[in-house]
Length: 107
Image (cartoon, rainbow, N blue to C red; front, side):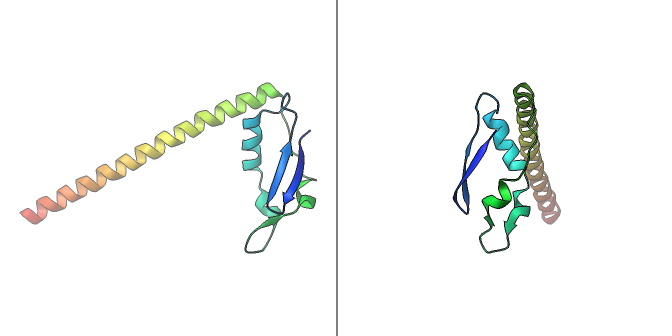
């Protein structure tokens, strides 16, 4: 069982049994948890412990957590490759457009 302790309204310390929760899985789990729905509407969002502590999160076996993290890492790497490819395509498109406009204006 993971235990969260409030430091301030904007920070928590999380204690968890390392033999049953993969740290990377916990990071992804916390990122994916929609904590925004539990914030109060102020200029700087505040999440109170009273709203966080009752949250229940399913916890698969450690081997499944590791498999999930490996799959997420694989998909994130693919996203990075796609972003790089898209950026290169946009650069190539801009160069082609500039060359075409240059040819038209030179004629």
